[in-house]
Length: 389
Image (cartoon, rainbow, N blue to C red; front, side, top):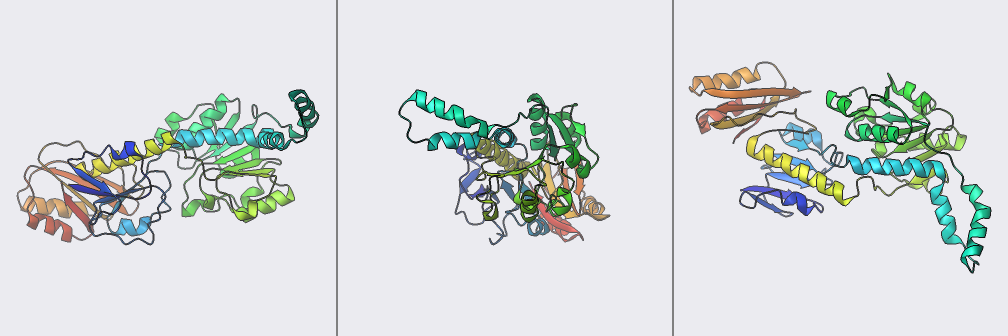
C-alpha cells in the first residue's frame, strides 16, 4: 500500500483517483510515500525518510524547498495548465475593469442615497456617468510576458477580443508554440515588448531569474499610459518601483492578484485577493493532474511535469523496473549497466534523461534484481536514489 499525506483541502475528485486497494490517503499519515498539497509551506517541515515525491496542485512551487528535495532524490511535481483557464478569465476581467472604470461605477450605484423611485435614480446616474468613462480594449496592444500554458491562452483570448498581442518568452517550448495563435507578434526582448504595449500581463514562474523582472529599469521602457497586470507571482514585480512609477505618472495603473499594504487606497491600483485560480473547476483539475502524476510515478517510475527532474516516460515492457536518480555527470549510467551485466541481468529496455544537474533513469530487466544488485547500484558514484518497481 502506498501512503499519501495530504495538506490543505484537496478536491475529492482528485483524491478519488487513488484506488482504495492500493493507497491510503490522509493528513496525519506516518512514513508517507508522497505528499499532495496546495499552498501549505513545507520549508519548516521535516522530510520523512520514506518520501519519494511531492505533488503541488497548482503551478507555483515556492512553498516547497525544491533544492533540498532535489538533493534527497525527491521528485517535485506541479500541475501547469490545470488552472490556466481560470487565470485567463481573471485576466480578461482585469483588462475590462482596468479600462472601463466598471468597479467605480458599480460602487457609486450602491452609495446612492435620497432617491425615491427608479426615474429619479436613472436621472441621477445619467448626470454622473461621464465620470466613469473609459476606453475599449479592442485595438489596444497587450504584451504577454511568458507564453506557457496560461500565457498562450491569455494571448489567444486577447486576440479574440480584438486586441493586438505582442509576446515574449525566451524559453518558448515547441508545445507552447503550437498552442499560440500565429497572429501573436513574437518580440525579441522584454524591452521591445514594453515599448509597444498598452497593457502588460505577466505569466512567468517565480524563480531567481525572474525576481523583480519588472523593476526600475524595466519600467522606464513602458509606453506612456501603459498599465501592468500581475497574476503570476508577487516576486516578479518590484512593488516599490511600481509605486514610484505610479506617483510620477510613468505607469497609468497596476492590477494585481497580490495585494500589499503599500498599494491600499490608491485609485490607480486594482487589487484582487489572490483569486486567479480560485474556481471549483481549477481546483478539481489541479487535484486530478497531481494525483495522476503521483500514481504514474509511484507505480511506474514515470515523471511528467516535474520542476526538478526531467520528463522521463517509458511503457512497461514486462519484467521488473529499476529507477534511479543521479548527478548529471559522465559514466554513471555505464557503471549501473556494468553492475547488471556482472550479475547476468538482461536489460529489456531503458531510457535516460537529464535536466540541469540531475539525471533520471528507467531500466526494465528480465529478472528481479537482488538486494545485492540494488545495494551496488546505490553505492555507485553519483547515484542518489534507487527503486525497484
